[in-house]
Length: 293
Image (cartoon, rainbow, N blue to C red; front, side, top):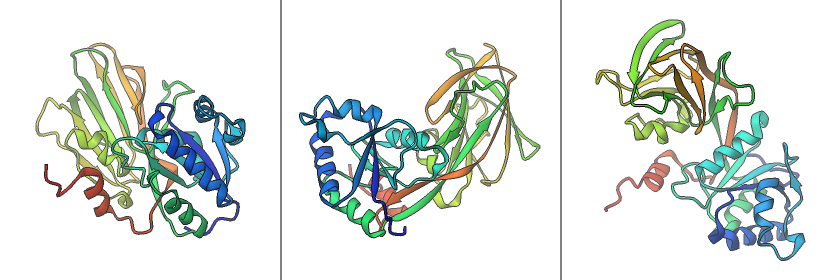
């Protein structure tokens, strides 16, 4: 990551973290002391304003795409995903400060703000381009999100009935999945929903996708890793006549027989991490590999 001239930080955060307020205030104070400019997303600013006795404590507020060099996300992975969604295709670097639980995407803490701030000022942080996938289809509402950093999933509607997902891979028939759902995961999302249904963990740099069925009717339907440049066509049918389309946790009800196309998105999310961060260290730290219970 090269050194940045403007040093303007755009702040995002979840609205339920009262126990972290002192650390967040300390981070902002330290950033100002070091000469950083601060901007604050309107929803996060509304939350912080409930506690700030001094009106000048809240940075200038923005609602759209900020004129900033780095986005800071205070929260867990869900907050990081929302930050990435709000930044769209800008490819602005995002640093996650973990105030949640797992925080697989958030590599920094509030314990020592200088680690992140020094790294931004010196340009010594590692910038990891993370590929996204996008979904398209004629029946998707125009205001529904289309790109996912973690996964796109089709799932049964609120009933006991399974759905049938007919999948074509690069124009050729792959399989009929009779299951509770089917997950199409990015390499980044391989440690999210995909992992919970027995899918493989992928190194993020691979840029591959994973197809993982949810409670499949046939035990021979196993997770499949495919190239990141592949195109998937999904054709859904169900007894209820409906299914759920989920994009990074946001979902919408769709009519059966509607067709979806899933492929790589035309932009990436640039994730910031410490210069000594490694894939193996993340697995040990976040998934507690090698830890005794």
